[in-house]
Image (cartoon, rainbow, N blue to C red; front, side, top):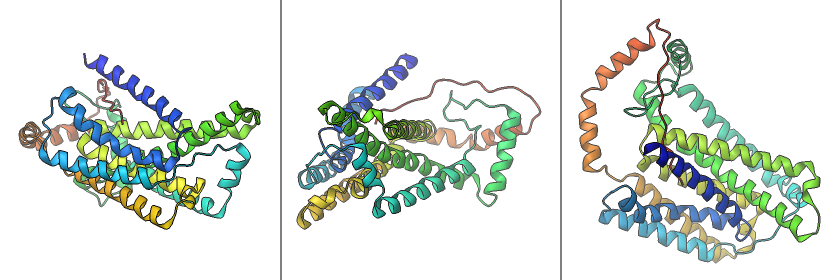
Length: 331
């Protein structure tokens, strides 16, 4: 049953991605990025049906804040949806504003990935039945390398930073996935209109390759965060950075905000901030009674598990840990 749910969730993830890509031909990027906040609103309706979760009054209030902010951003946001040729896209990328944003974006993501690679532990138990496959010798070497990179950080600090890095990196890649998808859909539309076949140019395939790479990295870090940490924390942080990254890219690359008046810009920004505020409130949701009971049960055995893990990491056995399926949540 769990395998069926895993494949079903993965299939829905791919289907949702296809619909997302198709939607970029009908609306601006900044407008579609704001729609990402509606994920939490729909989760409020589906969680009791699919997961048996109890929706509290606080959840309803928080979702009302998110819904109100999304409506404001949709109403006052840009609504023009032009199509672009490869030559026009190249002209947008080579502007001074776009180049500065591109350098800042690469520096931001590069720093996050470097920090993640320095902190991650390839041999961490993610669930009661889920571990990452690695040999004991490799795990010991990775543990020593991580200590060399961040020798002053204890395990608690590592886990706290890693818990934040996974959704932040996934959301940062996700916003750029939106930009690349918009560019790809525009190239396809320009080709179908008949003005010029954009697939005669090598730059078109480069954009499609970047789209595939960003989407793969987005799913990789999102899945890694969902495997290791609670979805209540991972999903809201991921959505916040997904929305922010998409809107910033639309501002610098597609320059969508230039068509808005000052009043529209203020109201649009206020709606986005209100949505992000509601999403962050959702991440502070207190755990349920079952989660609290589970935490209390596992707290007493943490020291024993750490001792066992330390013994396994420093043993000379060449065994390989067993693995099971991981969980993938559609966002």
